[in-house]
Length: 192
Ligand code: AMP
Picture (spheres, rainbow, N blue to C red):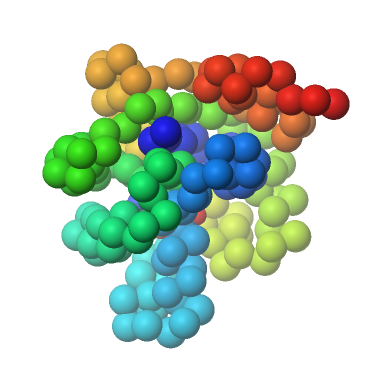
């Protein structure tokens, strides 16, 4: 199963992806996490990208598609993957289509976690305390939300036009949202 998870910063994509990984046994590919890892390791690419991520700006499409292609070469994606944070604009959505066609692994489902601005700000404030991410400061978050609205939101329409998009309400608790995802993916109800 190849799933693209969409949603604004703070919508809970990472949290839900981690739960889906346990359920489905396929890897979670987060391009944001790949960038944070590269920066932590101090690679040239990682440090250059950090200048952008710290401001809430997107890293260039070329860098991101190269990074993703490299990740998709690893064997663990044979049974599928959950993609989180990519595609982030229409150009990336197009390159992903081309890349996955070449690998004979097209996207099966795109899921948009829908959440309003007020909840986003609440969640990010909580995450800032818990994780201390450099790009969770108030000014950067505001920029990330603007970049999302301008560049990333149209990606949902891209998948809707191809009949691949399902929207899921992102309000409520982690388990509640996970149940909604399970039902979309026909995974039944989790034992309580
Ligand atoms: P995330 O962890 O998905 O919120 O990503 C954190 C930051 O990494 C974003 O604000 C961007 O600066 C950068 N980033 C992650 N994925 C992409 C992507 N697909 N294209 C461009 N920049 C990205």
